[in-house]
Image 1 (cartoon, rainbow, N blue to C red):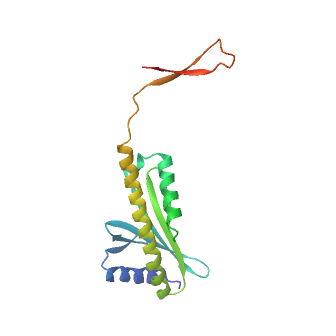
Image 2 (cartoon, one colour; image 1 turned 60 degrees about the vertical axis):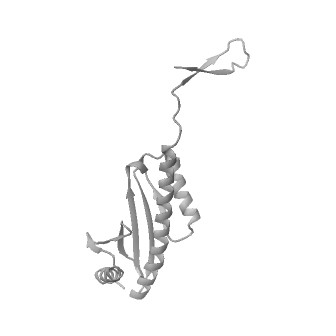
Image 3 (cartoon, helix red, strand yellow; image 1 turned 90 degrees about the vertical axis):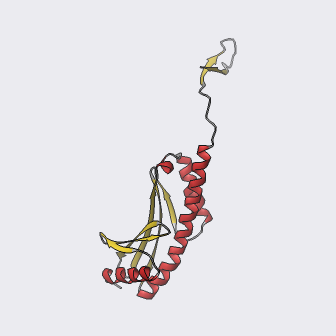
Length: 167
């Protein structure tokens, strides 16, 4: 299957039949599902065509999470959801991506359904965990603003340090 225009048209027709808004923009299919935008692209390889589905979320509150939180989110979803979708977390956004190879129209549509279902499950789980982490961050107690200095006791052989709180 080597005609990208036919692949796009087949997928757009399917998405429209399913009641979704879909359009081609800059050679990619962009469609909305559950108020979220997804992007589909096709790559031509030697023997098979590849369909790549991506979801990207940029959010200021997500950006404020720590690197540990972002890493936890990707690790949690990628290990708990053993499916075809993979979550990638970055400083300002997270992406969920999946892809599959196909050799004919029916195979493309069948695999699209399977991979997209897996992907939406991973997107939903990722959004749930991000929301929980943001709420958790809002409810964390604030430190009271003490600074610590090390004080060395010259009489001690080990020069053990004591922490002294000062304002």
